[in-house]
Length: 279
Image (tube, rainbow, N blue to C red; front, side, top):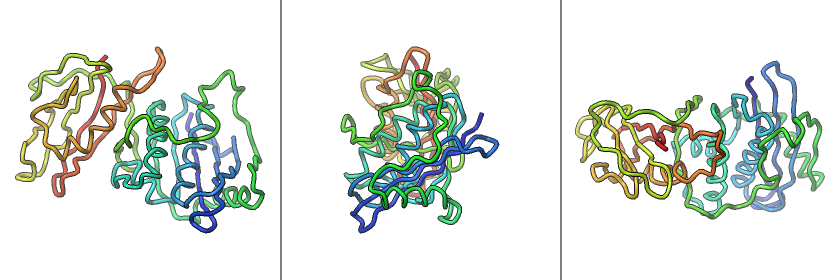
């Protein structure tokens, strides 16, 4: 089953009274959820992230469905895919919450669309702002006992710095997150530390002459109690917070950690790494 999740958020005044709109449809186009959420006072960008968090909470009612997320916030979409860094201290905890929720889904993708292609979610956000309260139009979620839905009100989770995660645009990284290291990898996997061992496998090497450390396709860099010594600082900066989130993600016994794709921060490098867990 595939779900389409349309989300939107906005404020009147920036910051000002804010609302978020959420629409969930099945693969036949039928509305499973339509609602607007009043958010109090915040900025437009914070409202967009709250729309994502509310949408992921609603979509958690169908934990096994593939999820396509649609948003007209180019900033948020590019931050979620890792193309932009999250520099705002106000958005950082919201970004991290979204990453933690996305870690629990097996297959997902996120797309940016023009505002005219996201009208229903925009309308619901405005209805919530007009009413000063949540406005629920359709709610066909499964019974609460049959879901793994998270808490109902998104709040800032300050347990860890923002997670700089990247998935290729309009695609999602899936799989079970447990893969053997390729033969001839450049690093020996480290012993487990406090959490899982996270490996970074180079899938696209750096452009010739762009990387001071160098990396070969298929080379594996293992994170145990510390970072690999042979990884360049720019790649380390790009993936460190994601490594920590993957290592410490609170998952149940029947859950696994999906593989994620990270792009090196170094300008002109072009290096891409796949992060996956062992243990």
